[in-house]
Image (cartoon, rainbow, N blue to C red; front, side, top):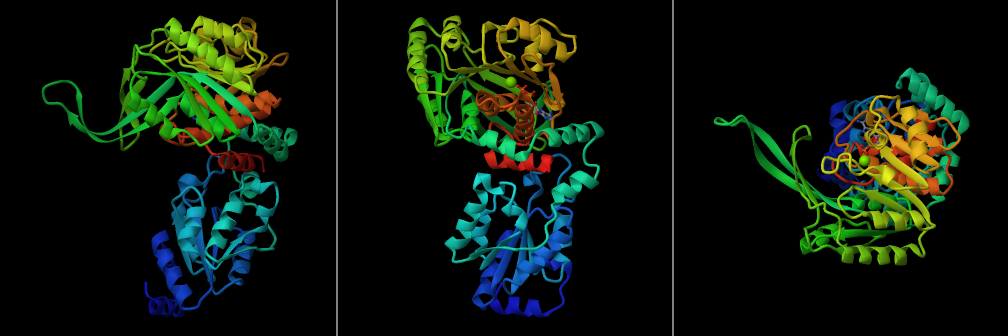
Length: 521
Ligand SMILES: Nc1ncnc2c1ncn2[C@@H]1O[C@H](COP(=O)(O)OP(=O)(O)O)[C@@H](O)[C@H]1O
Ligand SMILES: [Mg+2]
């Protein structure tokens, strides 16, 4: 858009829909405005349920320059709990665009505002007062935004108008949760402050965590279904693309690394070098890999054929040799464990039952003195053979309901009984979380009745690895002495965020903080 065009447009009465543009168009418009000497103010937010606090903020922001533009968070990144946003991004844009003092509106289709700011380069970036309180910037996001604004010579301002929180308004006046959820949240708000939860999360920041577990490469082959084969009773598909995620212990370690300073992974890799490269590539910067190598197989790879349109899994092929590691590899592993544990704060075991954690390794883990958190996974390759009860003791276990039932051979009793009586008497472990998918989780603390906690997700894209992510994030919190109801709540927030993403991607700390704020306000 040229300078004249922009100036011309501003002189005309404008239709609401003409004010709504893409981020790229907006960047061009801003460039034109700036070169014609106008000062551009940008506000960014969700703006779900526009209220007087928003109006005052936007109006005050407008006074900071000549033209006000507003960018809104795309629906998929609105991280304010179930049922939100109430209005989709198109409607939120329309509401904003209908305000007289709003010049242009665009949807930010990226997770954070930082790259958006680099693209738009406003003269002024304005935030409302609510960002000044409740430890909003524990995650340092606002600081990064301010840095981005200043990098292009812009100025950050905080408008000083009355504030309302749309989250608080929706929580209090809209029926976005079912009655049980409302009751649960009401009780939680009474017993736990947000600050207490933020402090718990911050208390594990400097932890050094050692992981032990099987490495799994999770490959997704995206296909489109063409139809039924003419000659066979099978579905014929066409491959579109593929993706590899480092899963198993690697994904779990990356998740912990979003909350703790240093993470080290002890694992076994196979005799294929390519896998190690794939894995190194996926590690967060604060995660270190210390592998032992087994010569009898390649690194475990699970290939899933996924119907792309709806992210539906059709079929799985595993490249796996799950025989126990041989004695040489085992003794390498034991000495590695011994060495790495010396200056660790805690150890997390993600045991997928693929041969790494032998009885001797279990014994070594149970006998060492550091805080021990364990998950022993039931999956198609090991069903019934990899039970949590192979560990005589642990400080914390986090398994799913199926794994809990298999471990105590009880298919039908209520899960509270399975957890609080049967499992508690079979393994020496004071704290447990048993997750149950869309039904949330049960938390147990020795000496107390198990408590059922609800799940928060309203959109599930891929639930693979959700339980591992919950273990990875909650284990340090338990080690830090966190109260189990608080830990379980944070775990379910993480679970809800995890199932929204495809494959093994980790949830950022900022998203968890936002989730807590959204639900507890
Ligand atoms: N379908 C779902 N709907 C809502 N939340 C889910 C769903 N699946 C998983 N979660 C969340 O993730 C957590 C762990 O998932 P779960 O499926 O129980 O573990 P696993 O991946 O080990 O089987 C749950 O406690 C819940 O918070
Ligand atoms: Mg699991």
